[in-house]
Structures are given as structure tokens and as C-alpha cells.
Length: 268
Ligand SMILES: [Zn+2]
Image (tube, rainbow, N blue to C red):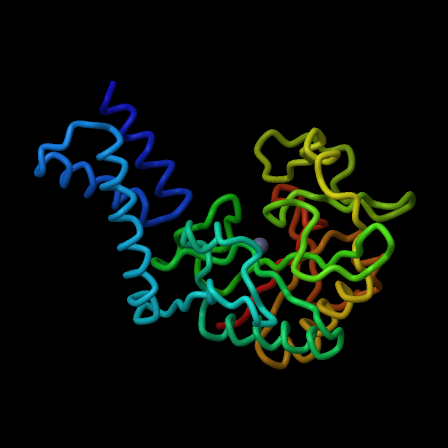
């Protein structure tokens, strides 16, 4: 039984954090070596090693071509939506991507003073081809997601806040007559989840169309000149925001919905 549980934990930790699975195996070995049998102490050993490994990844990943989006940047125009992204080692990007994301955030803060751009899932620190699930393509440092910009109940521009506590899954529902390329499909193997039960739980704020449009427009103009190749948002939002452009694409019906965040990709 212990073996099954350990294999399960190794897989879950690897999928969630990349380095967590290996840290877990090391922590089992260390606990045995130190003859620790109490569960609480074993957990302390794991957590201590995980913190050390996370700090080490920060230091080492740049040698392998990935840099962390800064975790402690309360005054910066670009911030992680939640400390969870750093805790789980999901905040790594290529040097070109970090530059593009910082330039986007600076542009947004200049055009809309007080605006903070929030980064969501990026990539893991190591190994090209290792996907950051559920985003299959976030596997090489060249992709990342940013949160939408929102307006509060009285129409005030919100900064650094998202409808959903993690920035994902608060879907903007299409207006009548919008393009719906996935309507009527019922794929079993899909990351396109509607999560209808969650929707009423999210804050009742509206999409800030002006700022979200400005971000997509920057990505497909100045951003493109700086290496942005591709942007994913849902077709009904492309229409609502009027951001049709050859860099703005549809991700397909088996990938996650993109009417809760913006995904983009750089050349290197
Ligand atoms: Zn993405």
C-alpha cells in the first residue's frame, strides 16, 4: 500500500511542480537515513527539501535557458497573479518571453496608469518538451498566460485582481450570434472544460474591454516586432474586442477555453 501511495504522490508532485516528485523520493531516502517514522516529521523533511530545491531551481534554471518571473515584485507592473505559481515552480520563461511580458506590462501601466498585468501559468524550470499540465504547449519557456483585466461592479478599473482566485476558469460567455467553432461537439478527450458549477462562485465583475483589447493589440504590433508569434483568445472575444489579426489565432476545440485568459508565444 505504501508503495502505491508513494508512486501516486510522486506522479502528482511531478505533474504539479516538476521538481516535487524527485524531492519527494529524496525526502523518503533522507527520512530512512535519519530513522524518522512520524508522518509529521517526514512532511517537515519533504517541505524543507522542497523549499531548498525551489531556491536552487531559481539559481540554476537560467543556465538551462529559463528565467523566473519575479515572485516578490509588489511594486512592479508585471506580477504573478498568486504566490502559488512561484511555490509550484510554474513561473519560468525564456529570456525573450520575460522581456516581452515586462514590455507589455510597462506599456499597459503607461497607457492605463495603475494597471498591473498579472502572469498566470508559464513553464517549469527545466527540460524542453516537459509540459506544464493542463497546458500541453507550455513546455519550452516560449509560452505563457496572462490574466484578463476587469472592471468592478460600479465600472471602476480593477488592478491586480481577477474574478477567479487563481486567474483561470471565470469564462466570459459569448453574446448571441458570436462565432462558436466548438458548439455541438462532445469530445471525451479534451481540455475544453466549461466548469459550469464553478461559474456562480466567481466575482461578478465585467471584462475591461478597453484594457484587454489594448494588451492584445500591443502583443500583435509592438510585441510582434519583439518576437511575439501567436496569441490565443476565443473567437467570440476576438470579435467583441475587434482584435482580428494574423497573430491572433484559435487554439482548437480540444485545448482549454481561452475566454478566461490570454495565451501568447514568442519565437525564442
Ligand atoms: Zn497558455
